[in-house]
Amino acid sequence: MNDQTHSIRLFIATPLKENDRVFLTPRQSHYLLNVMRLSVGQSFLIFNGEDGEFLAQISEIQKRIVHLTIKKQTHPQPKTTTLNLLFAPLKGERLGFLVEKATELGVSDFIPIFTKHTVPSYINLERIEARAIEAVEQCERLGIPNVHESMSLEDMLEKWSPSEALFFCEERAADALPLWEALKKEPRGCSFLVGPEGGFSVEEKELLKSKSFVKPVSLGAQILRSETAAIMSLCLFMASTQKGA
Amino acid sequence: MNDQTHSIRLFIATPLKENDRVFLTPRQSHYLLNVMRLSVGQSFLIFNGEDGEFLAQISEIQKRIVHLTIKKQTHPQPKTTTLNLLFAPLKGERLGFLVEKATELGVSDFIPIFTKHTVPSYINLERIEARAIEAVEQCERLGIPNVHESMSLEDMLEKWSPSEALFFCEERAADALPLWEALKKEPRGCSFLVGPEGGFSVEEKELLKSKSFVKPVSLGAQILRSETAAIMSLCLFMASTQKGA
Image (cartoon, rainbow over all chains, first blue to last red; front, side, top):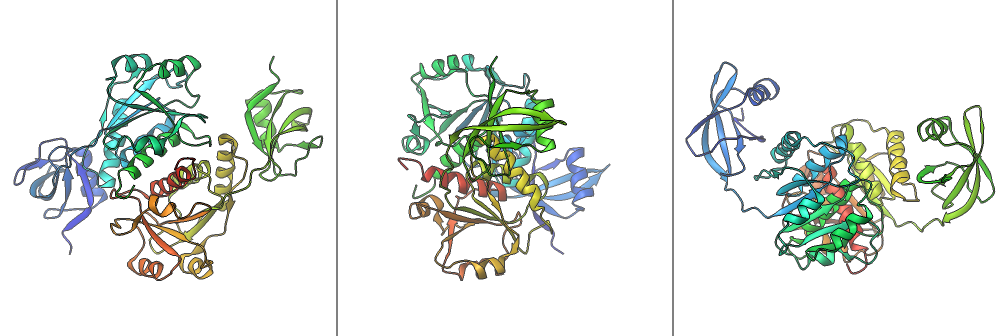
């Protein structure tokens, strides 16, 4: 019998150190015991987004709560690349999907921005965080993205550090620099701003272009939905960081 | 009152020619009359994937069926770039999502491939086609992607024209060429093969690598879900066709 079920990776919101003991939440305990059918002695991977990834062994089950002993570290915590996604909240599953894919593609910070044409008037930050953690658990990533409080486009532009470039993914922008070109000049971190389904208003576009740190970039001639534009930006950033790019 | 509602674009499965008359399906008629609240005299866009895009005017409503008069052509039919996506069917909404995004990103042909670790045992081609048409209607694309009959990986490799490169998007393939590099050599059409959630089996990988037309490519070190890998491949292809790439 194989006692190591390495395809399981759980996020645990406590400090992690070899030989320490931790216990799981009722939901996680239920998942391990009733869905995955693990028992005392079996091992799997845990991480907390700060201390790296560890092998952990089920040492005890008390009142349906799983207690773990932390064994050896399997991966140190990697240094995080700053990759900010500033996005207008979308309706329903499109938002969940955007968060999942952006997490897989390495976003470090989700920054919801309300614009004139944004349809939802409210964004549930806890749901976004939960979806991001789920994606991190599945894609072998170790860092948990930060989910920031939402703000208006105007407030964001006011607070933005002018020394940091903000790529503004513009629709139908034939004269904007292709993103791939722009990325050659930004090898380290990156920030992308993607608008709502209805696009930015004329006034918002003028405001954006009045800021020297806002760099309009083009994703090509085709029309992409908001979440697709965000994903494409992140894919190109990721590819640009690959060797040989 | 504005009589042209240009944000509406409907796919119509009949030949289209200026001054001809066509009528809509009950579902489309219901959408226009009851959801969008259009009436006689109003115009919108139609296309059929072959003859280009036209402005059409509602000339009559008979027994809740909308009759149209085709006015002037608004866009000629563009030449299609071959962009084949060979993919293992995924479960549930992941498949629908893959089809939607791949359509936005220009896939010309969907080719479902059954592999050893493919979870669904059946794929509903009509649902894929419907989802692709819906995406085409929304993203201003004019061509309708072809949805092919599914086949096994072995059959596909047997039938594949050896003169055409097939990019095999490999997971954890540190030695494979980064896709971006590989794309520089394939400026025209392209074919991508993406595996199921569980990946290809060892035997399947060996079979793939035994074929000279199969080109293993890497999407980077991170772990991506199947649909994300497919989308990333298409995003990079699309960016590679942009001016300045």
